[in-house]
Length: 126
Image (cartoon, rainbow, N blue to C red; front, top):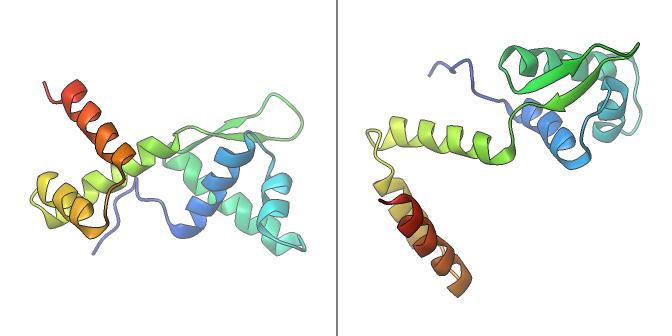
């Protein structure tokens, strides 16, 4: 199945995780987070992943300093929403109900989870 231009690969997700967890970073800093020993090939891999994420609108590059600094242009919740919407579109005819029903049935919800879901439904269900 063809991948949409907004899909994020697992390797790209690992780079985004680094930006979400540590904030803006250089290629070198992200490579050091991902690899124990950073050589030219690891640096080039992270650079390529950042280039792809930038093209997808997931990261932004600050070019004002001598070294480029990258930051996440989307947050975790936005990516979760994109992925869940894609799953609903592919597997549920665009409806979120079967997806949500399955998730709720798959694992028991805590009292706090149930309260949060009720609050969300009340707030956004109108």
